[in-house]
View (cartoon, rainbow, N blue to C red):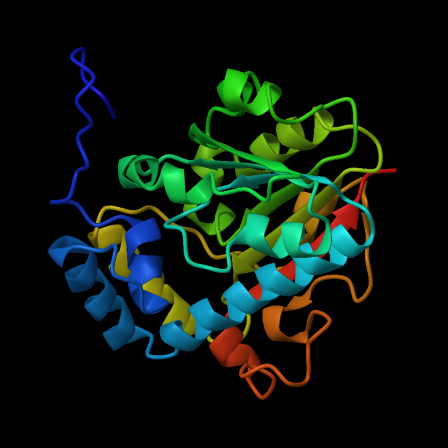
Length: 270
């Protein structure tokens, strides 16, 4: 966060889930604290590199599908470090006029906002420094309201985010608040870690993140399905990430549910 003089504390001495995810994807925007925490996570859950890649492919497929169906407004909460192709690149490759707002609470993502803002000339992108645990402030942000028309359908993306929002912080209530602010025809995309396929491994992984200062809560399929309450799930419903409308030529096509370690789904508001 910025101090009264506008100086941003990047908190590089503390591991952050966004920078750890960047490390898993082979990125370079990570630091010793992130790499140390990521190494511990990889030790207790060796599949995590595959998990990150599988989740990333799900983001690409789900975004492409929504753009092909005419969704022209996207709100991506928990953006993380920009790794190309990012959500706006995927959406605008299908629908050049698409508008995308990215939000994250990691101060270092703010330093990369310029990369996130390289929109297709026909569309628009914006970045908002915000925390999902304060949905009111996020939704009222001028950067969001200047870019998206909330009276029209919005594709809300909560990819690999909600497992960092424990029940104590009101994860389901937060999602309900976000859903209520969106117009009919809007969509909700979620990918979320689960203990269903490897309970012991996910318990170790959660403990590793907590030791690094990041709270977390993996959820069962039923708990994840609750995030979509009141909205119509698109086929094939809530499935392991690699099984959600897979492209057979992907390098993750032969993944297992243990490697995926997440459920994913997309739903539309009536």
